[in-house]
Amino acid sequence: MNRRDFLKSCSAMLGGGMFLGSGVGCAIGANRSNKTSSQKPNIIFIMIDDLGWFDVGFNGSTFYETPNIDRLASEGMIFTNAYANAANCAPTRACFLTGQYTPRHGVYTVASSVRGKSKDRRLVPTENTRRLAGSFVTIAEALKPAGYKCASIGKWHMGDDPELGPTGQGFDVNIGGGRWGSPPKGYFAPFGITNLENAKKGEYLTDVLTDKAVDFIDAHKDGPFFLYLPHYAVHTPIQAKAELTKKYQAKEPSNGQNNAKYAAMIESTDQGIGKIMDKLKELGIDNNTIVFFFSDNGGLHSVTSNGPLRGAKGSFYEGGIREPMAVRWPGRIKAAVKCDVPVIGIDFYPTLLELAEANTPAGVELDGLSIVGLLKGQKSLNREAVYWHFPAYLQGNSPGARDVKFRTRPVSVIRKGKWKLLQFIEEWTLDGGWKKIDSNNSVELYDLSNDLGEKNNLAHINKTKRNELLKQLQNWQKKVNAPIPTEANTKYVPSS
Ligand SMILES: [Ca+2]
Image (cartoon, rainbow, N blue to C red; front, side, top):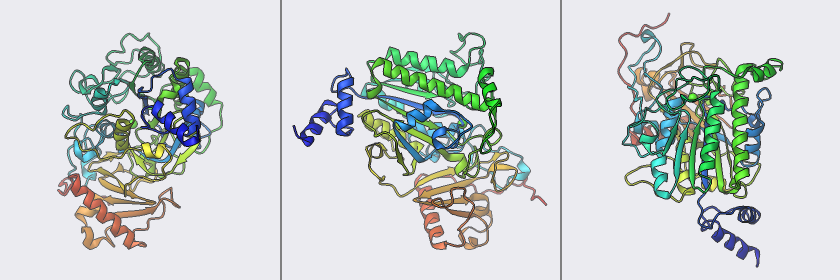
């Protein structure tokens, strides 16, 4: 058999060539797996909460220790330009679950869009939608008809069952998910979370969710399954096991990272991921399970440092939206490969559909693109740009923020190639828009290829690029009906 015939027969064995591996990887998959040729891959999607881009070893942290996550990454593909769809929890999740940008579902932020003091807000923001409506077809509802058993184990943040929780939105199993953005009573049981009441007093939430995930994998090893594992960790409250905390208290701070409890929370999460990887190997389903690792927004300013990135959770500078991301599928995705193509949370929905050979649900318009081609080694996606829209206020301080009162004010953003443009809606709407663009401070332009920290605003230097990106952003705003706040807040008091 020549190489071409060999590859062809491998691809036939492994699911009709839906996802071609290298010849070697293909052979590994065929030999180790007991699965039939039609077996679809299991999908595990690990979403850490508030974990910053610089909070893992594989992106450069030396203070936090993440050996299992680093192994996952080194055995798969690392995405260096991966983005969450928002800078905080709920909207990122709504985008992941629907495959749609924020203006489609209206979940822009957590809680109210009028956070901060009224006297400091120049505009009346767009009202926020706090729960994902049941009418949206979630990724679980799309995977089920393709034969997938779907579980959500961890933080949901989109509403409660029976209607708006995971089981109301297509998951067969919900463990620990509801309206909560963090464990109401903390990380040591009792947590105050429905259907985790049986946890023994003092048990650590991250361990409990890991064990539940391992149990689910065990019970559904014959697959195919979709395990969505959105950990509550490492969101506040910052609470960790004492013995792990001690280890980091004895460690020298590094690159602005020095919070021992936060480091211990990360290590518990990392240990859990190690357990899950071990379980896949033990069950012999390692080669038929694709594992995604991602986070929902940037690291929180008060507990971590996002390294070279400007901003933190809540900011639409890179520190708030660029995420650690890796995808591992032994034998199918080449190990130790980096991909620099920008990808964003809405891409997972079509990616998972393609992996599962599932159809796009009728009437659903998906905003993202499948990244399966990138996982196969392609060097680009057929997409000009990715976007963000945040017509709301988020109070608090963030390193590199434009002012000390808000992590972000209303903003709309485009990333196109190496370029990123931010349109600040207060200045844009109230200070003259296009007519005053050279003086109203409404737009910032950065070249991320040599300015990852977004320090050098080129909006007045490269006006051609600025105008090109701004026009493209405005076209997108029209396409998705993005609301642009225009009403001045009558309670606004200009600061002296
Ligand atoms: Ca979060």
